[in-house]
Amino acid sequence: MERYFQPEIECADRETIKAWQDERLVKQVKYVYENNAYYRNLMDEKGVKPEDIKSTEDLHKLPFLTKADLRDAYPYGLLSRPLKDCVRIQSTSGTTGKRVVAFYTQHDIDLWDECCARAIVAAGGSDEDVVQVCYGYGLFTGGPGLNGGSHKVGSLTLPMSSGNTERQIQFMRDLGSTILCCTPSYAAFIGETLHDMGYTTDDIKLKAGIFGAEPWTEEMRRDIEKSLGIKAYDIYGLTELSGPGVSFECSAQTGMHINEDHFIAEIIDPETGEVLPEGEKGELVFTSITKEAFPLLRYRTRDICVLTREKCPCGRTHVKMSKPMGRSDDMLIIRGVNVFPSQIETVLLNEGYTPNYQILVDRINNTDTLDINVELTQEQFVKYGEDVYLYEKELASAIKTMLGIRPRVHLLAPKSITRSEGKAVRVVDKRKLHD
Ligand code: DLL
Image (cartoon, rainbow, N blue to C red; front, side, top):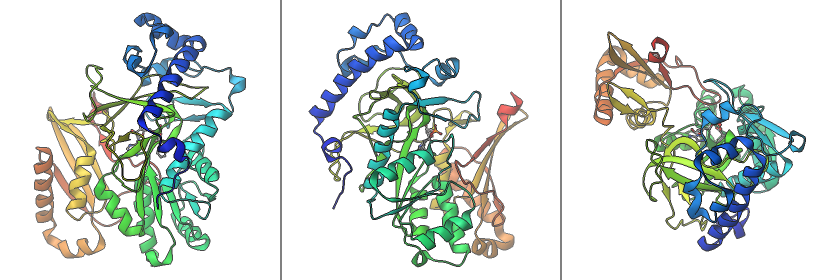
C-alpha cells in the first residue's frame, strides 16, 4: 500500500493546490519586493508592482532570475531576511565561476526536511528503515537534505557522506541498511564494489535507493536496480531552491512529483522566455513560495524537461516533471549537431556496456571531434581480445544511429576509468580551453 508523509498536502485536489499557490505567491511577491532590493530593481525595471500579481495567472509578468543574477548579487544581495535570522548556508560546487550561496532560516530548513521526508516515504521508507546517506555532507546540499528528511521520517540515519566505498559496504552489511541515498553514478560504483568484494544482493538488506543530483537514464536505473537488488527512485533539486526534494519519484517511477505547496513550476522556451503549454519540452523555471531567507522568483534552472498533470496511480496530485535531459548548457553542439550526454549513455547501456564512460570533445583543424572512452567488463575484455576494433566500430555505428554523427569509440581495459563518488564528470570539452 502507498504511504504518504503528508497525505492532506500530497494528495490534495487541484483546486486546493491552486488556491495555496495563489495565496502564497501574492504574499511572497510582496515580501520579496519589500525586503530584497535586487529583485525590487528587476521588478521596477520591468514596470511590475506587487499589486499586479493577484494569482498564478499573473506569474508571467514577473522578471526572471538567472544564475548570472545570483553571481552579481553574491553573497548577500538576494537575501530577504537579516543575516541574524539565518541559521545555515549551503553552496554549489562552483566549478564554473563564483559559487552560489543559499541561506536558510530554521523555518526554511524545516520545510526542506519535510520535502526530503516525502521523498523517503515515497520510496517506501518509514521509521523501521535504516537510511544510509552517501551524498556528500558539507556545503553540498545532498547529505544535509536527505539527513534531515530521514530524521523527520524517524528512520535510523547513517550519515556516511561519500567515499571509502568498501567501508560503505561493510556498514551496509553490519547495520542492515535498507535505503541508500547517493548519486546514481556512486550507486553504480557501490554495486560494482559489492560484487568485487565477493558479495551478492543476498548479503545486503537494501530495498530502495534515492538517487539524484545528476542526469541518469532509464537504462542506468535498470543497471543499478539489478546490481543492488533494489528499486531505484529519482530525486531532483538545486541549491538555489533549498537542495534535494524539490521533486521526487513515487512507486510509479514515471517522473517526479514537484512539491507544489512550496514551488510553482513553469516550462519556458529557453530562447524566447515564452511560457510553453503543458506537455511541451523546455526549460524549467521555479518560484519558491514558502521560503524566507532566500526566496527566488521565476528562477531559470537551465534544466530541460516536460511537465505532466496526468493522474498518477500513486494517488499524489502534484505535477510531475520528467527526468531532466541535462542542463541546456550541458548540451554539446558537435559539428552543428545537438548532443546530450544522456543519449550516449542510453546507447552504451542498451548495447551491454558498463556506465563507466567518458566523452571527449575537441576541435582539431577547425573540425569538432567526438571520442568516447568506454570501459569493458573483465568478461568482455577476454571475449573481445584482438577483435576489439570490430566491437568499437559496431558501437560507433549504434551511436551514429542515435546522434547522427559518428564518434571514435575506444573500448578500454577494466577499471581504467576513474569512478565517481559524487557527481560524475562525464564530459571533457577541450574546445572550451582553446576558445
Ligand atoms: O544537486 C541537489 C541534489 C542533491 C539533488 C541530491 C538531488 C539529490 P546542485 O548541486 O545545486 O544541487 O545541482 C543542481 O543538478 O539544476 C540539475 O541540473 C542537476 N540535478 C539535480 N538532480 C537531478 C536529477 C543538487 N535527479 C543541478 N536528474 C540541477 C538530473 C539533476 N539532474
